[in-house]
Length: 70
Image (cartoon, rainbow, N blue to C red):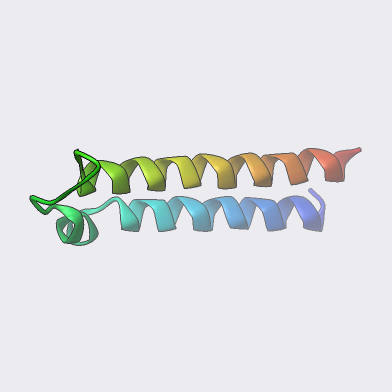
């Protein structure tokens, strides 16, 4: 395994831990309010934003890894 692959692996592990933290109870309780934005509850917007950001980050890391292998 090259040093670049280990670096990507470490970043993926960090991303997993970060996502697990921001999708856990204490942080979710902050956004669990009765208020809405455009008729959509803030908690749902937060969950969708975190989910979309995590997918984008994994895609960016996966793309970098494939580029390094060529």
